[in-house]
Length: 272
Image (cartoon, rainbow, N blue to C red; front, side, top):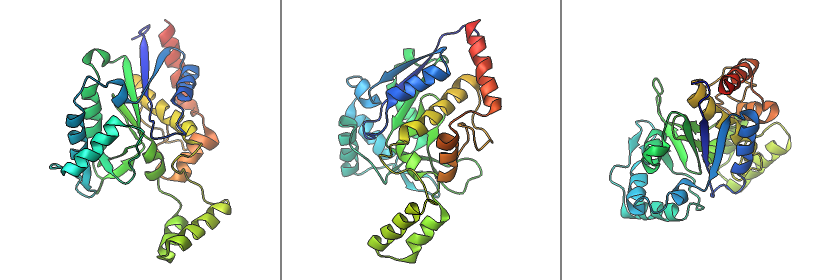
């Protein structure tokens, strides 16, 4: 594949106002100058007119996960659920917290929206979305929320960056201490103020920097066949806790030596 032209297409997420996809594109260009990077509006707006919004809305409603243990889907969605999804398809800036979608089913839906001529082994589509996605992998006893679903199109969930990695144990204990929501928030605020607790929030100003790492994960998987890294200081690390995410993407913000060498080899092969 030496000398082959490769392209990354990024789709914005208007429901996440702190996400700067153009900045992510510039980051990828600086890290991997041999890859062409294109930034598009959100996937539903970009392909508007090429699909039936009501059909897409029904399909979205049907891939909601109704049982996080079995992974059962919402096979017979209610009209109100379809209407809700239709509003979000027509206005992608609307938020959707608290609904979990099957990540692989969403990937299939998005793949069907992209014209076949744009789907190739040399073009990766990465869709940023505010939808929370989950999968139940082999050996797991339940569905787990994910930040990224690797493949083509790849999915990076801005809600997943907030909800999927576990927060500090003390956070959950503080929630059990009292049933009073106000007191719960006071305990959490005190914990965060102490400096020992940290995690991403919705509309977090650090979201763009975090998503640079997940964009790299998608690129490494698709173009280099490398999924995740065991080094907790590498941007390819598969974080299961907020502390791990913050360490890999913000405190380190770099590739480990192994993957830096792998990337340099990829760049050299692209120049031949």
